[in-house]
Length: 117
Image: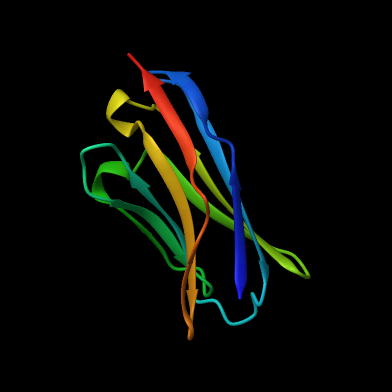
C-alpha cells in the first residue's frame, strides 16, 4: 500500500502562484507514475501532469508553460510538487495527487485551489 498526503492549496488571485506538495509513503519502491489530476464542480476530472520514475514528464496542453511538476526521492518517501504560475479562475478545482504500481492506483485526499478574478 501507498499513502499520499497533499498540501499547499489555498486562495490566490488571478495571476498568482501556488505550490502543491504530495508525500508518498509506504510501499513506494515499485511505483511507476506520480501525478496530479483536478476536479472542478460540474466538470469531469481532468489530467494535469505526471512524472514517470524514469523522469519522463507529461502535461495537459492547457497547463504547459504555467505548471511545473517535479519529484524528490528520499529514503522512505517520495515527494511530488506542482508549481502553478499565472493561475486563472478556471484553474479553481480540487487537486488530487496519485500514483500507481502493479497493484493499482492510489489517491490523496485532495487539496482545494481557488483562484479569484
